[in-house]
Amino acid sequence: MYYYKGMRSKIQKNNLITIVLALTLLTTSLLLSLYLNLIPSQNKLNNIPRPTISPNRSIGNTAAYNAIKKIADTEGLDAAWKYVITTYGQDNAKQIEAHDFAHYVGQLLFEKKGLTGITICTTDFAFGCYHGLLDRAFRDDLKSLSQAEKACRVVGPPKSGPYSSCIHGIGHGVASFYKDQDLNGALTTCDTLPEGAPQFCYDGVFMEFSRDALDDFYKPKDPIYPCDSVGPQYAYACGRNLPSVMMSRFHMSFEDIAKACQRSQVRDIRSSCFTALGFQTLYSSGSNTTEMIKLCETLNDREFEFECKSAAAGELIFQNMKNWQTDSPLICNSLTDPDQKRMCSEHSLSIQKNYSRN
Image (cartoon, rainbow, N blue to C red):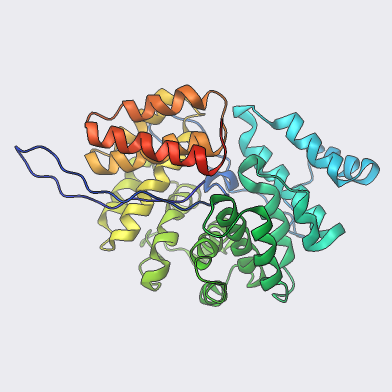
């Protein structure tokens, strides 16, 4: 999931609609939903199980992971990573598990090569290899924080999508260091990164908490928590991760999540939450473009629908899903307002350029 920040515009009745939206392509790698086993459905996203994390915090121990580990041990880590890319690439149905396999290879790389292993990772599967490596890097201490940020500059220059997604992985590692318990400690650690990097680190922290925080951390009676209690600089990143919490922990439907987000008094939370719902449509629909469009249209708000569809169209490109070249324009063209349609297309084009999608 990449970074996209929309601003809610004013709509005047009986006049031409003027929309002023700032589309800021930031990025993140990690999918909100790649950590969830999302169940495809048409309008409801209920009964979504949380992922199972083994006691040693590896992602799993299935036959697939064992196969990867065997190749890594016998043929080397380069071969293991190429195996994952070859086996799971360009298959839309396998993108969720492929991201987790990429995490696993990243963990193995750090254990064998330390931060230098980052040169073996590629951007496949939403930067999962980078995220797994960086998550593992900070599990025991934060001594390598500065070196990790510099390693991310190898992935891409500061402010680029690849760099931002790499920094996002640092956020996961920082949250792991704090055992997914000390949110303030993790966020203030992100604040020590160079200018321009903390926002992406925040996103990784909140995503890691949404995945692994103890059950009593979140509050069913206050589904916006902790976004309504953190500083304003953290609100946008927090809101981006609310849907995964509401779906996996509270079993809320797509429509109910939208209503909860809309009740927030903080503009950044509302905007990022609806953008995140756009990302989620890809996985909840089983990458069915028609269903992605329908889910966004259940929001019953023209501008939230716009933010949802723009994010959904962009997610197809970011994840390099099969047939994104035709499916992404279909989503943008489903918008009825010409200005919104144009901005959605421009946003999609910016993602293609930033991530070198052809």
